[in-house]
Each structure stands twice: as C-alpha cells, then as structure tokens.
Length: 77
Length: 111
Image (cartoon, rainbow over all chains, first blue to last red):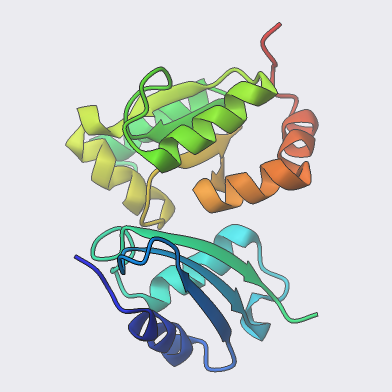
C-alpha cells in the first residue's frame, strides 16, 4: 500500500496549518518518503513530541499504509 | 495501564536494561533496514544494549506502539526514557547528541 506525496502533505497541513512541508519520494515508488516539516508548533518541544504531532496528523497511516517516511522536524529560525 | 501484562513486560525490559532497542529481528540479524541502522549506530559507538525482537511476540509488537504512543519500530530506550525511532536516533548520532546522552546518563560501553 502506498500514499501520494500530496496526500501526506495535505494531512500534515490540515493538522499544522502553518507548516512548511517538503517531501521527497526517495525510491520513486510512492512508498519511501523523506519529509521535512517546519512549524511554529514545534517550538519548545522535544524531537519525540514533534514527531508525535506529525504522526497524529497522519491519523494512524504511519506504520500502516505508509511504511517508510523518514521524518525531520524543526521550528522556524 | 500497569494492569496490562504486555505493558508490565515492556516496563520490565526497560527497567532491567540501561539501553533497550525494540526492533524487528535480532541485533545479529536485523530483519528491517531501520532496525539495522539503529543497531549499527549503537554497535559503532560500542554501547551495550538489549535487543528485543518484536517479531517473536505479536503482543509486544503492538504493545510497544501503544506504550510510547509511537507508530513505528525500532524504538530506543535509555535508562527508562524513550529516545526515539530511527530518524531521531540517526540525527542524534550524526550530531554527537547520542554520545552526549549516553555519557550524561552513565551508560556503560563495552570494553
């Protein structure tokens, strides 16, 4: 099962409206992505908490339809 | 939550070992690239860790995700604290933060 990059980006933006999302389809197979998410919501949060916010935005798809999403998160400079 | 036997078992592993990696496969034979990557980072740092193979126990495989509110495996725990999955561990390894964390927590290195 795979997910389109645009759907991943939309789900993240629905939960984190200010997010800047950059997604790379690493293997060109719609199943191995790397995402960089920048949002004010991440300020003052640990990396674990930042990633949890993104996983919540993906509503259970991470680890299921979405096997491989390498995630990098940060707050705006 | 502590009434749940799977959680008790997970907590036991985390309490009983300074560094615990819940992973797919064993440290010798990881069965997934992400588990292999974290195993390699820990091995290169020469840190002693306990690998728990979630493929051998379906209750732990699901239970660890509920335990940490984290949807993927591997998961690294250091002195009882959830550090992160593959991406976070890799980032911390590359930046030197992982070594700093191990040093601060007094984690034992293999001699």
